[in-house]
Image 1 (tube, rainbow, N blue to C red):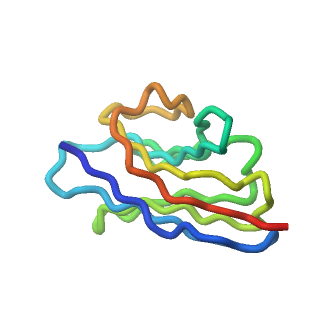
Image 2: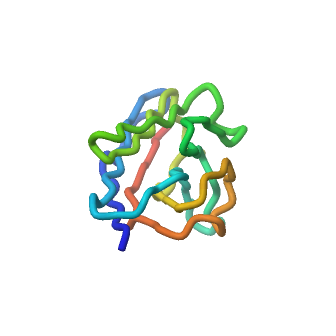
Length: 123
């Protein structure tokens, strides 16, 4: 069973930065797609950034140029560097994984999820 644990959330002023990490359990089958999603109160969970097995990435328009997804395969860790944060980035952020390699921001296509980490941006 794949287990994902997110860390790095917190409170930050608008314009600030945060770096989220997601540690993936080691005893897993090959993971081909990894991604970050977020859910604000009263809203649906949306895709933020994804990465496939080749290292290709895709971002939501709202975060392009501000967020960067990366991974360290040796450490089984996925990252999300978030810069120039604004109040609209406030949400619970979730790490997700799936054994199929694809570049999709659709949450329905990811089979494994972490518990989430809260990001709060104050203006």
